[in-house]
Amino acid sequence: MHLDSINQNTNEIESLYDYIADVDCKIEKLNERIDELFMFLKPIPKCDGLDLGLSHREQEVFIILYSEDKVSLGAVAKRLGFTEEMVNRYVSSLTSKGIPVLRQFVGGDLFLYMDLKFKDLQAKKNVLKINESISKNLLSENPI
Image 1 (cartoon, one colour):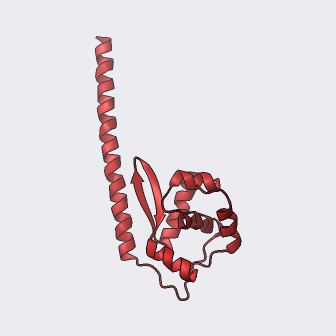
Image 2 (cartoon, rainbow, N blue to C red; image 1 turned 90 degrees about the vertical axis):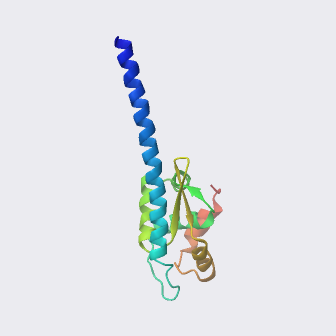
């Protein structure tokens, strides 16, 4: 009888875990849609006179995102020696300043990438005025 109740509890836990995983997946999809809507509502900043004043750490995160097509949150954290939470805060800061950082969840992992139009704009005009020494240091290291 005792074993039957343990088995029932185990089955309940498994079904609740499946339910939570399903809800988590739906929340991730909603976050992706919210990011898309945010980027739609807040267009790419104009390049003339743009001075966002990115901090040193924000520039490092930006350079990693700029130099890669898609990169996982964990890979950025590992590359910079940050925690994933720190990287997430810097990405949120970049996004709040109007830099179009897009997010995509794949198999439970968060992947980040830059909007291609903004990447082109940055390549042509260096609208963010990224410090060359920071970019040289990061880009000369081994890629992710």
